Length: 342
Image (cartoon, rainbow, N blue to C red; front, top):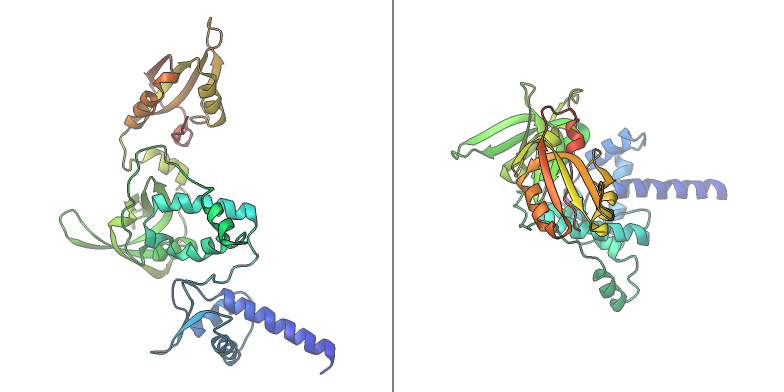
């Protein structure tokens, strides 16, 4: 074997090893058969015994590859050590790390701890990007804080395995078996077509389609278990997530569409509303006959949350009126708005 051939073979071995390492998960066990199938699906041809030799090399170098091997039964299982950095390429940049740090703060207040476990290795990897010394690391962690703009609550508990099964089903468009307990304590099982996840406050909802064709949703914390099925399905063409999320009622009381009109002489208040408007229908105009005052109008959903927001900012509002609309001529998704701090 000449030098060029040897170098080429060595390079191919390295590439194959990287591919295998990237297919070993960190939150569950995988087997040789599953890894082999994943490689074939990606167009990588490799004999089963060759794959086993690669995995043996990985096992023999546990100081380099912190991978757990379950040998109590067959087939053997493989997974990355939950406390390790896992396998993440390329290295995160400082800007990416900053965004992940903000995401981590946000997720901690909206999801139960066990739901964040699968991404903790990535978050730890982000922290290591600029870990020059203990002082730098400690300072960095204190430079990001996410504040809620509404009453805060603890996120409800989501049972182990529920989020993982639903995430897999959503990714590959497979049906999922849901097990839950009704208000009368009756055990219920139903097979549905998962369509989307909606996060509202600290609660996470699964949007799904029933066999009858109806679109419904359920809070994940109300599920006792979820199981990925092998049955694939085609997403319904008549489902629009934006429209569905704008029309449904979750954990708040929403009313009819109405026209909101606010008069204000606070330039900072008006400036922030111009930067983050209620929705696409919002307009800001000079108040007639009043220098230094503005009128903000928008078509929004009437709700107790809106009343609370108006009361919170009454110091910046001269007057406000709500006028009911006879017909909703604005698409539902255009009425969605988010409360913002001012």
